[in-house]
Image (tube, rainbow, N blue to C red):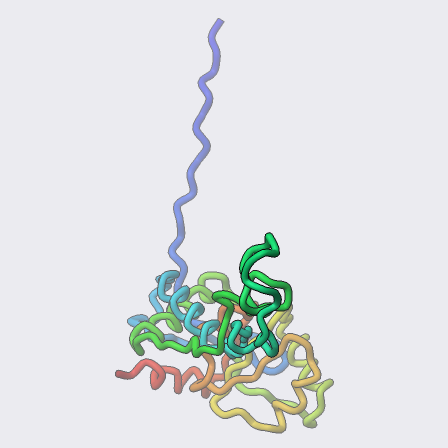
Length: 226
């Protein structure tokens, strides 16, 4: 009796994603074209190490460093010797504010300090490029020609979000932040408005989708100049 040999499953060839262009939409959610990115910068390579370095620095710099405890020198009281040195059968004690006693001082407790530190500019730039490359790979970075609304009202901004089918946290990056647009969007949950000069890798990584205006995309190379 002959048996059929098991055929190996066909292996699909990996298709390299085109990282050089972003889909462009209008305020009605219709795709109107592509925006060509600088292929020297946005190669699709994600350097997780530099992103980690930036996030560690960012989180450290957000710490206020105000935690404080009192040593035995700072706790009030304890100036009188609690009992005589000898004859009680107890361990000798000179103060009721010893760290060994209840309500005494704290040994090696936290004290106010500055947690701030910095990393090189080149590492910051590489972290931003890598974070954006990660969004390209996930199809989570798109362009929008402009934010057009008949009236500056929250419901009209929400209509743009619905037209683009955005879910989760959305980061809008504009050439210049208009306070009126910022005001109409602030009541919408999980929406941030940032200037193209001010957003950072942390903003990109915590967002589900990055939406960048055409004017901001055209200005983006300025962020990566030496």
